[in-house]
Length: 433
Ligand code: PHE
Image (cartoon, rainbow, N blue to C red; front, side, top):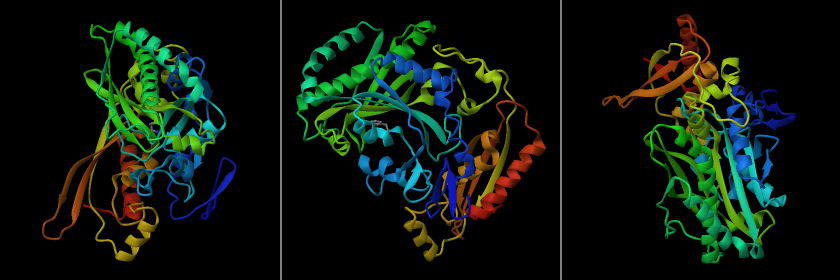
């Protein structure tokens, strides 16, 4: 890698105004947790693949995709917030780390697959806490039919509905296909309805398979509750989000819908129609295996790894809880940006990248992660005010450090905090108070 280009997985990528992926993130590409035998992410992937018996299991080779695959061909509008430099990792203007497994829908349909599951690592710039990590894993699933194959769908759905009715499962469906969540004009509404039904039955039965046994083992007698909500994605309609009621709260676990006919046309299979879903493996694995912090998935400590076996859902036993150590950081935001610099930022995709003078929390968190790696547990805003006279804005963040595997020394944490501050001053132009 030079200052002008970077070599990743044997390819070179020219750097430009969009380049915002630090080496600490690129270092995650070879880990492939979803393919590591006996790792909880892999165990969960396998359980879902076993449930969807005759679906083809796929894993794409590289996390690097074109912005065309990740956004354009799926119908994301030019001003979609997901495209911004504060939310996604770019290698340059044309290449990025995929933010979702949907980036592979078109190529997978083009390859002729009709029933498939695709698992992969995905990358998003985000906040720092026990359930957010810049790399996580998704599984995309889809099923499509040709018109004549759809003849049997009604009876298949009836059979599935009957099987589900026999399960201790409460399904709350608050997704009505209304004006806000319409069928596609090119679809016969009767058929689209059967496809949506099949999607619902398929996912309800998968969710029951994963959570049902755990629920049965637990002390509370209530049946498992699943909730279907209307959603919006540029590449499906109607679209839904599915939530599971767990430990007293509704947890969103997946997004799905009837595949936009445009996607199938793009893939060269305009005669097919069907559904797709995308689920977050960490979210579900944290519940099923009782894993309290998302960083644990990245641990190479045998005390973590040896607790899991392929094919089984076991409860994680924390081996030790090491003490946390927090440091507060108060600072002034950079002063008014000069108009020239602000225009440059806009050209690079809506601004707000590290290096320009507009502050964004994801840029802040990126630097903290880059310095502290997995030793940072959470970053929380604890104060935010604007000086009435000068108009200057001040923020205070609490940085909570803790290792999953050992005790941290106070000097060690001070050194990390010092380096964080130095980088924030240099790159985000904040002014410590
Ligand atoms: N890709 C979507 C996400 O990451 C999930 C999704 C997949 C929605 C497939 C609909 C169909 O949020």
